[in-house]
Amino acid sequence: MKGYHYMAIFKDIDVIRYEGPKSKNPLAFKFYDPERIVMGKPMKEYLPFAMSWWHNLGAAGTDMFGRDTSDKSFGAAQKGTMEHAKAKVDAGFEFMKKLGIPYFCWHDVDLVPESDDINVTNQRLDEISDYILVKMKETGIKCLWGTANMFSNPRFMNGAGSSNSVDVFCFAAAQIKKALDITVKLGGKGYVFWGGREGYETLLNTDVKLEIDNIARLMRMAVDYGRSIGFKGDFYIEPKPKEPSKHQYDFDAATAIGFLKAHGLDKDFKLNIEANHATLAGHTFEHELRISAINGMLGSIDANEGDPQLGWDVDRFPMDVYTATYAMLEVLEAGGLTGGFNFDAKTRRPSNTYEDMFKAYILGMDTYALGLINAAKIIEDGRLAEFKKQKYASWCSELGQKIILGKANLVELAERAAKLRDAENPGSGSQEYLEEVVNQVLFGC
Ligand code: XLS
Ligand code: CA
Ligand code: CA
Image (cartoon, rainbow, N blue to C red; front, side, top):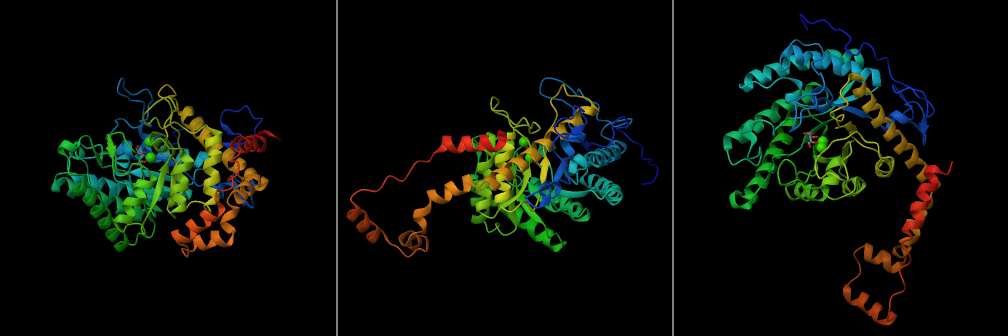
């Protein structure tokens, strides 16, 4: 791009390397060893990590009670300018390259400052995506997914697809159209819908049916347009139960899947499951992954962590190894992801240095590496799988199979019950034993 000269931004930080579990170097991986073979494949193939543009290059610590604590100008004279947008591209690609992160994810307004005139914003998106393409070619780093931010601008206060205003609906359509153009231009694998404002506060002023149906109409238009411009990837819904809306229509995986099926969108959509959103929905992360997987809709993951004591979306970097282990068990069981692991996570407000940005990603990548190593050990151990097989063994019987094939009826089953007089004890669930097996596999050697 004319008039812009690349400079290293993280000058004092070297490429981050694997040094092993005994290393005391804060800027080294202890567990993420991209080339290490796990169940026949290098670790990096199981763990396609992605950087979130908004948190890593945008979030600077502002919260409801105070202003920025970090400097994310990356050398630009003024934030919110195209010079700053380009500095973010430089910082982002240098950051990903140094950590060995192969993908990135973005919202339209993370990439460029939004103008009051959508035509100007769109020109800026064209310009920045040209620059990003150059960087992608230089580094081999790819786009995992793009999305349109349809929640920050005040026009979306009553929703985007669910807005009461046709004009606001048109702006949502326009932003999606442009974000899809840019996703295709950057070769993105997916396109996300996260509906922060697609919900409501009170039924007193809300036409729920019209709103839900309109969201589906907008998604259908997105699929038709995306396919018409050559987008072959997956569309994703990212469920979240609340925040910012009190009731969000994509509450959890089961709700989103029901919605997609009811509106004939299930062939084009999968789910992007965020760990923190599972916590907010009162589920475990692995529950959300399992529900998605058994419906053939596990697409991508936002790899972060909630806080068990806080009821809001804290987007911490993942450090809980049990959760990562159970998540990786689900992913392995599902045969992997078509998407990737996006660190939709931000450093805590007082972790405000460039080094902290790197240390946070090292934590996240090491946590998922441990999750993968542990999940592989559990699978290779085999006791959990064997227990489940025995637990459901009666379904392999002649009658079990007849029921599964839909060839049984209530009358004959009732006759069998009458003959048996009472059912056999179905057997212990042995939860404590299985938890002990997990601990033994994780810490036994
Ligand atoms: C917010 C969401 C959002 C999506 C993308 O809670 O996690 O960041 O991932 O719009
Ligand atoms: Ca997310
Ligand atoms: Ca979140």
